[in-house]
Image (cartoon, rainbow, N blue to C red; front, side):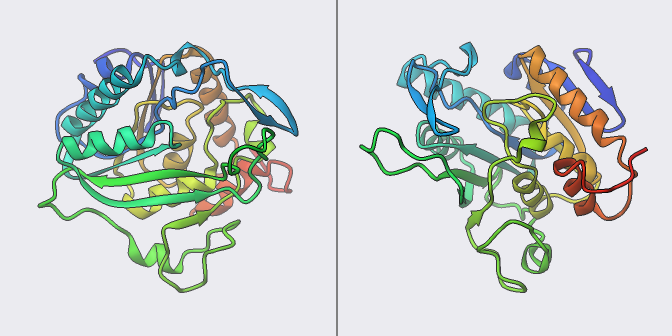
Amino acid sequence: MKKPYFKEGNFTLYRANCLKLLSQIKENSVDMVFADPPYNLSNGGATCKNGTWASVNKGRWDLSNGVEDDFDFHLSWIEACQRILKPSGTIWISGTYHSIYQCGFALQMKGFHLLNDIAWFKPNAAPNLSCRFFTASHETLIWARKDPREKHKFNYEAMKHGDFPGDILKKENKQMRSVWAISPPKPTEKRFGKHPTQKPLDLLSRVIISSTDEGDLIVDPFTGSSTTGLVANVHKRRFIGVDTEKKYLDLSVKRYKDLKTIPQTNDYEQQLDFLSEPNAGYSRA
């Protein structure tokens, strides 16, 4: 196995091509994969940021190589994840309409059982400055099980009775539905640096609580700033994150070390609250 870029306790990061690293993980050993693959949007376009035009170019890793090559890439990494997942294991994939349909088709081609598609609604989404399209205010998450014959994990009671701050659509003691209203990451969640597709702590908390148990192994093949790993660590899951970009792995380490300054308690949501609200009066070590 390749030497980790960073490892402490159950939090492990690798700087590597995800296909090569995934091939070194033991077959049928992973409980859940969360993947936020490139959206292939870095094509010279523009978007709205803080009310003004801004480039959508994120880096070479987000360049499109054309429809067929982009799909072959998605098929390859999904196949690599399929090998390491336990038969009852599940995969979550997040994306926009630029990539999510290719990922969904690839999952079907590989024989995954699609469980849900989740609409992550962003209440404060940026406006569309061109005024020629509907304002994009959601991303889609696909949740799928490796083996249709196996029983997957779903912590129903936690999803029904859990307190999920910031979700204006969740009603107390009601079944959780497939539209989640969660704001993008707060500025304080990016205080050590920015990743262009960083996910909010609240989103990953819901994903991880719903479909894994304490001690489970979670893999993120496109870990970025490792929101998945932070939430996994708070909730006592094991984590392996992979990325090719050193600057984002360094950002992940900074965020993890900040997490370790918070006294560890059984109040997991309180720990996550103070990761996103560092000046809320909680005494750090």
